[in-house]
Image 1 (cartoon, helix red, strand yellow):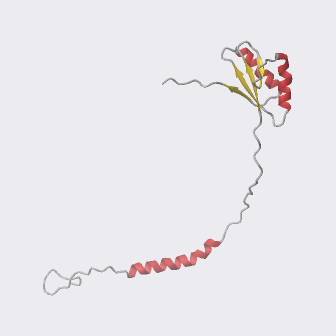
Image 2 (cartoon, helix red, strand yellow):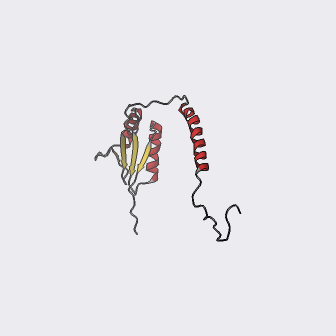
Image 3 (cartoon, one colour):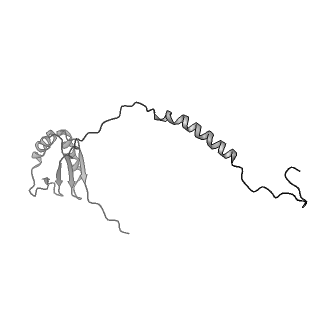
Length: 143
């Protein structure tokens, strides 16, 4: 037989070496392919990239706090003296005319009627206030 036999009549031992010739051939072919295609990767696509600016970000607008207690008294910006409800509209109009317009934070007592809060929201809307937020106290979760 060409590969050897089963007998002990001087037959050669099986071949234990790896034939590396096909491996070298494949590696040379890959080397040639990469050498040919490598110069093609240097071409780039022309695009117009945006430029970054160093301009500082706009400062956040001021906030105006309007507090309303259970009796219906109004307090402007944590001032301890209440003001009359008739003075609310001119204050809101002056605030709405500022640039950038401040945010209006409305704080109301827990016992305040919704009607009083709705009247203040309507007055702020008529004055041209764009941003109105409600300030609340978070409740604690008993676990």
